[in-house]
Each structure stands twice: as structure tokens, then as C-alpha cells.
Image (cartoon, rainbow, N blue to C red):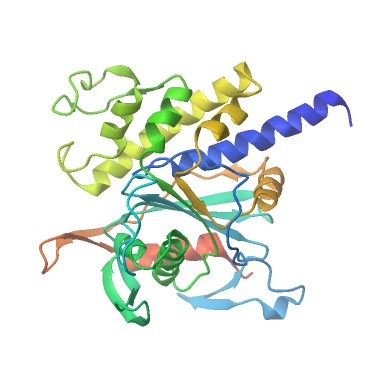
Length: 337
């Protein structure tokens, strides 16, 4: 293998690692993952075995669906509080998951399916008592799942379980959780990210005129991606659109910086780190990224549904059940001929 070929493979590997990280920075929205960090591991969803008869089948609307083999599911979580804050107290103070994005990597079809989940989605969430014991599940906003647990790892574990419950029991084994304070650092290291505003948001920043193209500072990014009540129509659905708008622009800025500076990836990982909790070790991340470097990354999907006001006065999002089932079948299964 020539030196040029090795450098090309290394560049594509780094691009995928960082692009996957960019999907996660939008939540609250965190920072680039420090990919060397190793944490407690849980087996990802993968092929059940060579015997096709062992693969799970589901019946839906007169068709049979067989699970795809070799899948890896990764949940990206944005936490609504900064890293390095006050220590958690008890088993119900881990903060909320303001941003949830599930990536399902399929090696057979060489693709990555992406689903952004509204933080207000009603799901079955495992709840804990004051002593940390599981006391059952309750229907509540999925963002609250992250509050349960005594450690950041446990917070992520219960969030992954809530997402699994929402998605018809499909396994969600791997996660990145990122806190809000990495966004300005990440954005400024990119040299600022340029976006064009589809609506007038001058009530947040005088520069945010409809149609204006602005290179965002780190603090401006927080206003675009994190603020909700005082921006646009004040809904989380609107904020999710802004997060995807920023993501697309940030990807372009990242690729430009990688081409300009071969040491940029190291600079990013050195500058950011405390804002991440993950159970994916360095080796597995690199292997997954290298394996998937030529995969098709599908557009980020969202679920249709209805926003209502719950009995407690807070917004609830009830996902359309048929649309949810169809997304699960497409991402995790294939229709049997």
C-alpha cells in the first residue's frame, strides 16, 4: 500500500469519526468526542449468528420482515447542563437529554440510518426509587430518562433503555453523551460556522435576519441550537430544524479545516474532552469508522406526530405509531421476498 493510499484512508477514517461526532454536538448540544476515552462496555447489536433461522422475524401488514444482521446502533445524547458541574445527588438528578439522535450502521447495505427523536416524545421510562432500585416504568417525556442513575454512565444506560422501549424493543447498546459547553469551543476551532437564516430571529440576536448569512461565534451557536422558548415558535420541533441546519454547515466547515490542516483532528481532541461520556472504546470506534468510511449516510429522519399539553402543563409529543414502526422496520429489518 502506497503512502498516498494510506494517507487517504486515514483521512477518510478521521472524517467519519469527526462527522459522527458532529451529529452529537447539537444537543444542548455537546462537543467533539475524545475518541481515546474508554468506558464500561455493553455489547452492541450485531449479527445473531450464521444460521438464518435464528434471526428475528416480524409480521406487519401482511408482510414478513427479517432482522438485518451485523447492525451497530449508536445513541447520541446532548445533556442540558455543562460538564464539570456539581456532583449528582441521589439517583434522579442526572439532567435531561435535550438532544437524541440514533445512528444505525448497516454493513450489509453499506448505509447509516439516522433518527432524531423529539425530547418531548412520550415513552416508557424506567424509574428509580430514592435508594436507586428500579420501581417500574412510567409514560413520560423521553428526555427525563437521563435524570435517573447515580453516575453519568447510568444516566446514559437508562436513556438508551427508554429509546429501546420507544423503538419496539430494538437494542441500543452504544452511546455518546455530550454536555452543552463544548459547542462554543468546537465552533470557534472550526473558525466559525456559516449559516443562512430561514426565518427572522432578531429577537435573539440583531444579526439573525431572515435571509442573512452569518458566520456564527461560539456564543451565537448556543442561541441557535440551544434556545427554544424565545426563538421562532418556541417549540422543540423548531429547535430540531435549527440543529439540523447547523449540522449541515458544520460538516462543510469540518471538511474544509481537515483539508487545510492535517493536525486539526488532534487539536480538536486536545481542546475538548470533559463534556463526553461514552461506552465505546478507542479501538472499536476507529474500526467502525474505517469500516463505514464509504457508507451512504441517509438524511436525518424525524417522526411525525402530535404535540399536546400534558396534565402537568408541559408539552408532550406523541409519535405516530405507524410511522415509528415503519422506520424501525426499514432501519433494523428487511422485507422477506
